[in-house]
Image 1 (tube, rainbow, N blue to C red):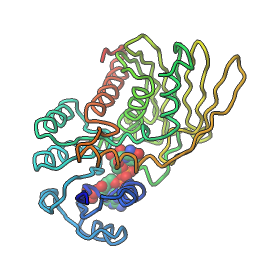
Image 2 (image 1 turned 90 degrees about the horizontal axis):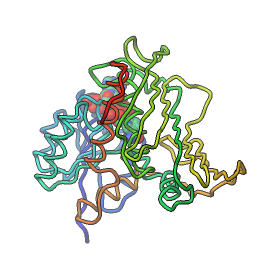
Image 3 (image 1 turned 90 degrees about the vertical axis):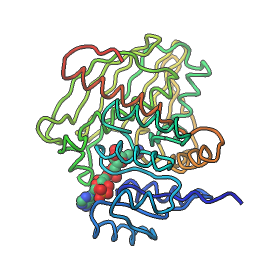
Image 4 (image 1 turned 45 degrees about the vertical axis):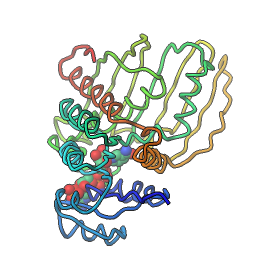
Length: 332
Ligand code: NDP
């Protein structure tokens, strides 16, 4: 029998409760053994509600609790420190996005994982969605022909329960760049099979984020092959669904409602303007993230999104932010 992978959770967060704890429990060979949070009463209540045997107030306590892997989902400014401590303690790491708030910290995480021969993965879960896998397949197989234009629209009205540090605290990594831009960068790197090399961006504040923090970003970016991509991201769009459009010389594909946590959405292939639905069997992406991670820990395959992939998405978001503040096109 394979040894159980014993997970410790760093951060008593909503995403862990809603998606990751169920995903770990749904994946044979994985169990949640401990959770760490900064507030004793809150983390105890969280452990009780989520049926987690051990609560820890400090990271050091969690790392000494016999865990094999940690899932880091506290606020963004804490990700890198937690990951570096966990890797130094010999633990495999699944980190939330953004993997860090600086390129330097992200690079340190990547080289530490390599040096220690540990798995470092980042939870850009959209790579696990069948809709996005199909989009990648359409690009790779040549069904679309040569791509001539791509558009992404990740606009939502941020629910009240997701406001707070995410909209108001610059020191905790608030704003769209660290929340949505990193996701879009990873998704597009995955679907297009190549990385962005330059970016220009503008931001807006529509009253969802605190003054001085963006709640809207409009980006134009170019990949290594010269493909131009337009991306709109927002916490303030109430009446639309998230979308992706890939336009090629042979066909276009329109993906509707596909940039969310829950699986779902619709893909349509368009040839000469005639649209036909592409059937997709939707699946929850988070158990896939966990299964690929656990396999990689056991030496089989690689995680869905590696530390290097996370670094690439972070570098894009940081470059887009610099582009917006300087008004210049930034080479990545
Ligand atoms: P939460 O706001 O739910 O939790 C983040 C941290 O905030 C917790 O770890 C906790 O800190 C603190 N906290 C939470 N609730 C309270 C409270 N009531 N009072 C005081 N402190 C509180 O964050 P999310 O779950 O929305 O996001 C966590 C991370 O996951 C972020 O980095 C985000 O970017 C990422 N994320 C990723 C998604 C994905 O699909 N990949 C989707 C959603 C989020 P502590 O534990 O230190 O006590």
